[in-house]
Image 1 (cartoon, rainbow, N blue to C red):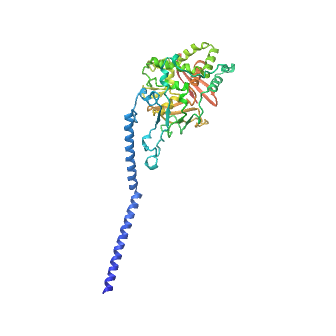
Image 2: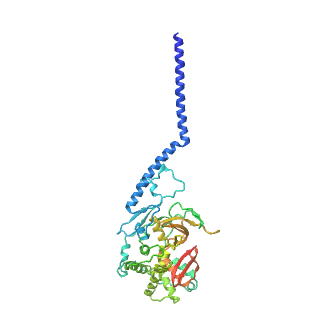
Image 3: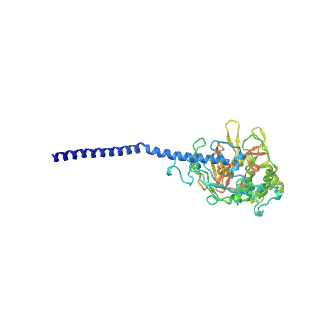
Amino acid sequence: MDGLIKGLMDVALDHLGQKDDESRDERSRSSWAEVVSGEEQDDRQSQAYNRNNQWESHENEGRRKEGWETEGSRRPQKDMNEGYGRNEGVEEQHDYGPNHGNRKEDGGESNDGWETVGKKHPKRPHKIQMDQWNGYKRPPSEQEYSNEVEESAGIGPTEEELADLSQACNRLWELDRNRLAPGKDYQIDCGEGKKVYEKEDMAQGSLFSWLSDDVLRRPTFSRFCSLLDNYNPNQGSKEILTSEERQEQAAFIEEISRTAPIKYLHMYLASKGIVSENYQDFKRILTSLWFDLYGRGGTSSCSSAFEHVFVGEIKQRGEQEVSGFHNWLQFYLEEAKGAVDYQGYISPRRGGQIPDSESQVLTIQFEWNGVLKSVSSTLLGVSPEFEIALYTLCFYVGGEDNYVELGPYPVNIKCYRLGDRIGSVFPAA
C-alpha cells in the first residue's frame, strides 16, 4: 500500500512540474511576441518622444522669453538683425539650426543616438564680431581708419587692360589682397545639387561651417557689415536714412578707397575720362552710385544699388520672392541668425564643374525669412572693396553681359541699368 501511495504522489508532482514549465514557456513566447510586434519598442520610442517634446517646449519657451522667433513666425528686418546686432561690444555666439531644439542639453543626440531619416544636421555656432560697429556712426572726420594705406605706385592699368575688360577684371582679382582662402579663413559645405525648379532641400545643414574670428574685424569687412541693417527688405517700402547711417556710408567709402582695387578702379575710369582725376570727387561719385535712393516697383526712394545687390529685397506684389541678395557676407550673417535656410547648389549644365568646398563662385538656392530665392550666384570670400570695384567697372565700361576671367573662374557679370543707376549686378557662373 505504501508503494502505491508513493507512486501516485510522484505522478502528481511530475504533472505539476510540467504545468510550471509550460507556463514559463508561454510567458517567454509572449515576451518575444511583444518584441517582434514592436510594442516594447513603441513604448521606448514614446518615452523618448515625450522627453524630446518636453525639451522642445522648454527650448521654444526660452526662445520666446529671449525674443527669439519660432518656426513660422515673421519679424521685420530691423528686429531680426538683433540676432547679430549692436550690443555695446558684446560678442555673441549662436548655435542656430532648424533642429537645435531636438538635442539634449549636454549636446548629444536625442533618441539614444538614433537619427531621424531626412533630418537636417544642427547648425554650427557662428561668432559675430560687432563691438566696433557703433563707432561707425560718428562723422567720417572723427573716425579712425586703417593705417595700411596701399601705395598707388604699380597699381595703374596697362594698355592691354584698358583695351580688354576681362583683363581689367582679372587684375582686380589679383589686387584683392583681402580675399579669403577656403579652408583657411572659412569652410563651406555645398551639400547636394538640384535643378532650379526642384523643391526638395538638398543641404543637410548650413552653407558655412565656420568663419575665422578675425575676418569680421578687418576694417573694410566690418564697415560693410555695419551697413547691412540700415534697410527695410520689403520692396516698395520707403527707406528713411538717418544722418548716422549716411555717415556710415561715407566712412565705408573712405575705408575702401584706401585699398588697391578701388585705387585701380579710379585710375582705370580716369584714364578713360569717365570720372575726374580728383580722388575726393571720385569718392563722392561712388557714394552716390551705390547709396542714393531711387524708385523700384512703383514706389519712390525705396531702393538703392547697395540694398538690392548686397542686402537683398523681398518682392511683395503677387507671390513673394527674393530679389538681389548676391553677397556672401550678408548670406553668412543671415544664416548665422537663422534667417537664411540654405537649400543646395544649382547643378551645372552638362560638362560644368561640380562645386566643392574650394569653390569661390557658387550658384545656390535658399530661403530668406521663409521666402524662396530659386537661383542666386555669389562670389565667396572676396572682399567688399573687390565687389564694389568689379561691379562699378562693369557698369561704366561694360554692357549687360560681361564675360570675364576672375582668376581660375570664367564668369558673366550681368549688369542691369535703371536709367543712370545700377538696377542689379551679379556674377553668373
